[in-house]
Image (cartoon, chains in turn yellow, blue):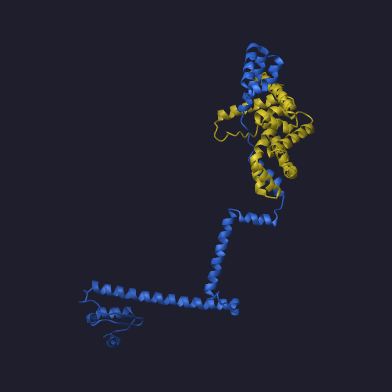
Amino acid sequence: MEADRELTARCLAGDDEAWERLLKTYSGKVYNLCYRFTGSTSTAEELTQEIFVKIFQTLASFDPAQGPFGVWLHRVTRNHLVDHYRRTSRDRATVSLDDDAGIIHPRAAPSAGPATRVESRERRELIQAALAELSPDMREVVILRDLQDLDYAEIAQVLGLPAGTVKSRLNRGRMELGRALKRMLKGEMPE
Amino acid sequence: MTHAEFASLLTDYVDGTLVSAEGAACEQHAAACESCRTMLADARLAVEVCRAAQDVTPAPWLLPRILRATAGARQPSLAMRVAAWSRPPYGLRVAYSAAMALFSLSFVLYVAKVNVRAVKLSDLNPKTWIYRADRHGHILAGRAQRFYEDLRFVYEVQSLLRELGQGKGTPAGGPSKIQGERGSLRLAPSISGDGALADALYRRLGIGGSGERQGGVT
């Protein structure tokens, strides 16, 4: 947290190296969040770039007294994703996974064998398809908790919701996700 | 425990953050209630699948693209450029450049024979530097040439003496005295008696024939 605070201060002073370090630290998280919400690598790339441009332009508005940089970044990301969702006027999570057919960048890709890659990709597609069945409210809570590993307090800060609401959404989200996964594992793919 | 109570504790129960008494109560309820057991299984499946999911890594071109779209659009200030130069690895480059500049300056001062402790007005004139450097260079070249010729002379004498020793036998006692000076050579009488070899020696050394030798060799 201290390191982030120092990096953001250096960024504001015009230090490009600090900005690059901040980017390297958080671009993966933001990209993952975007990918989980949209289910498309190309859209996730576009959104990640847009989010970091926004972060770069509004970094001066970040107040360390209000919370850590990571939480602020998640909040900006989440707001941008909501805007994107509204802009596209349809649930982006229901887009076809064919969008990803060309480019896949699994973390274990360089060392993993073809079988592992296929398994990894199938699992990822399964999760994406199951997440797409959730409502956006529930999906964002599940993603932040179980895929981004944020704690309840951080999720509450990011979403601006009481911790009780976060818990109840997470509860319902998990059960719905579990049901969707079960259906898919039994071979009943969603429409 | 009621179904509603179980549902309200389900998230913490799955996360394992409940105190032991509540956890035990949830476990008992799930064992007894099929619908709650199904809810628990669904939630656990979701968590397990999500936690087992690998992160996706962005494409390698994404980071440079973002950098170009953000910091790349900004022109660094003069202070930032100077600061960047003082940072490694540029710091090393600066140190090398400074060392080379110092070496070049000291070399020029040495060649131009400028006394840094008593600099005169004429010392600041580049024409003086060139004149002195030229003079200094000629002196150095002259010394080097003289040294080379001396060395060559000594080696020639040595090789001739070796030839004398291997040819008709080393004269008794060998050469008693060799005075090497360009253009003149004095050999001890002990080897001057061997006429042919002595002539060869004088010829090689460019001293002249036997006529000249009459007065040259003592």
